[in-house]
Image (cartoon, rainbow, N blue to C red; front, side, top):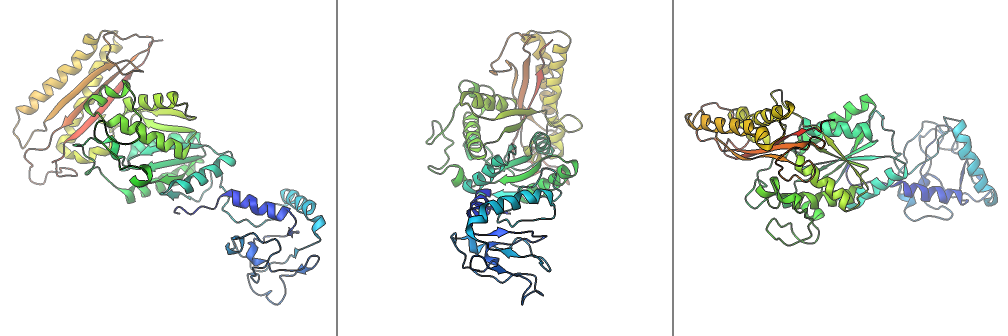
Length: 464
């Protein structure tokens, strides 16, 4: 389903129209109509559907209705029945309001009594038929979100840039466990890419992303959890309606910057990254108004930026941070892993190995920066030298960007860990392009020519 959504507010308008005294439904059984199926009958007279067309499955259509509401007659019937056998009555106006109220109350005691509707009902969270709405524009998504709010449903938002993998699926599962509805956004945000970064080559896998979400929604349905009910895939013109996105510094446009939080570590290596992240997340939060938002721990500094964004701008949403999803050997899942190929992928685990060595120091009681980080630094240096000694057709060269021991809130470097607060170990490496490919070697997307930045982290928990 695309951007076409009939809000329940229209349904309420129609119900008010009925309640005001135009028509009444009386003792109907398994009959569903739209207003265009009712032809004009003077007050006090009746329309018997079992007349000349009793053999047909529909009533005769007409557009002349007392007190006509513009646009109502263009709505299509929701369902048809083989042989309606009850009357549609147009009694005197003075009795209509109370009669309709009694009819609505009677429906609660008669499960087989159905009234007509002009919009799709909001299904329960455990409904078996997946029905994911795909939105490309803001207005229809907001209308749909308003409907969910009026029906006391909750929304969990999972922002993504597409190229979905099991890490994203984990976020969706957690969102579905806490909310009736899950919104997934798919948008490659240009303002978080620097001028020399991989925006043009970032993987775009729309069809496979939708297939993955469909299968995931079926899984959620069978488990009785919330459902993926909306995918928001806007254009850049939709997300940046006034000026084109600008990744230069200082840049032209409307931005949100988190200083100094967004200027250290990843922010130092990628100066516009967190400006773009904070800006696009503020836009998505304003558009989707989620009850909860879900981010992976792999992007640990990003979660701190989002937490600060929510706090400083008094956003009415809760942040959920989900543990990093990993391969069997510990490599953190990332959309960029498709670039690695076999050789660089096997070497990419070096970052997690280094962080684990630092973590082990904390576990045995070390608290100073030097004591905790030196095994990680030593491991990284040894692996760099080992690769440099190998032949070009065998090695996978990489550079260490940083290894960090930082405050758990500000991400600023610390010399000593306060064990009542804990700390964050994090790092980044760049896997360099393959120098010489071997015959038949699996090189990944881009034939091994694209440098791949890998990040990872481990949270050092406070000691209780």
